[in-house]
Length: 512
Image 1 (cartoon, rainbow, N blue to C red):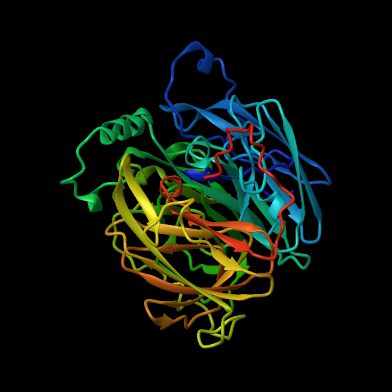
Image 2: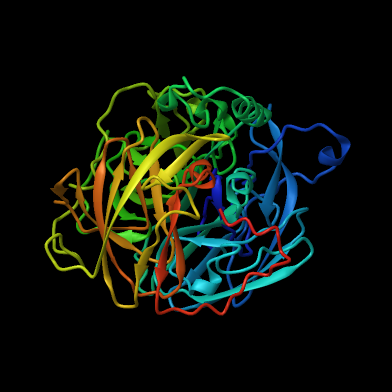
């Protein structure tokens, strides 16, 4: 089995789960955000284990509690899939039939959402929309065919802003039939945690009772400064296991952001190529050196480099947030003990512009073709009765206007971020879309096919997709705090009749 690495994911509104069974080499992959409780019940929880890699005809996942040792000072109670954070990595081949049996041993309902994967609608894992939440003690079996190769992840979509934050996520790797050979294949999951998660609930309680009439809303929202520990694969700082390489090897790093913040990553000492985004290959990627790769919540990037510069080098996050220093991993050449590198996380480097990266060619869609459905998605921030709300066209879910389509429609969506300061990484379930333009300028690089798109304040994107997967699908912000506070709409197929009827007695369905 190839050496693989998994990492943790901090996502507030959606969660995923994955499984397989060979021990992930190198480290304890458990990680999670939750209250730093010291009562005896929590202290008796088992320590989170190393992330395993699972494959085969039937994969078993168990949602259960554990204690995650993030570094030598912080140990947090977490929710896990199979006792680790990130949860087990599910690794399958293109064309495989995937069968995942999830047993819930948590004290509350859970689900699995397959983030970025075009599963049938009834396997999408959104409580109250595609299925009932899985109650404590119950089991549910997910089944779909692995049609599209690439790097994906899974997480809970039940109260996801809380459950993903507590560690309920893992990765799903679908290997192509014609696999490109690499010598090392590592998965790195990025996340943020609170050493004092109680601060979040205290702030929310204080906000709910205050007079909002003179509040500067642009400076509010959830306070990202509370996330003071940044992790890779559930570990921070010196606890992150080094990546071993040998001179001459081709190395693939699968980068997954399971958190709520964007992270700018810098690979020291090597040129690298971005070979895929959100699992989808890029056309003729060019080498990059000393540029930052910005990875937003929910996004994935696969990068490759040739290990041609022996020594010890860093892949590190750049920025000045409190937790930034913990988000770095050493790349160690075997047989080379010398430290040839030093951190430079505050150095100002250019960020790769994905709209100009790679070789231009015509993709599945163009700006000037005729579309059956056009929709403008105006993203906003406002003050509601009980605190901040995040809106689509001035409304919060479930009052947002859906994107109504029928099977076969070509759909164009204009996404505009009018929030003064909030970044909105928008994620579409069940489909891939092509990014056609940014701020009125057509994409001039490789066709950019994605399922998660980061939209900064003031930015405007035009994207297009084909309505080729009938169902009712979420389209929401993957800062899960924003989703839980309203920034959700749906793509609804008018010619689709769901075979799911929500259980009127199941009041626990919380699909955000």
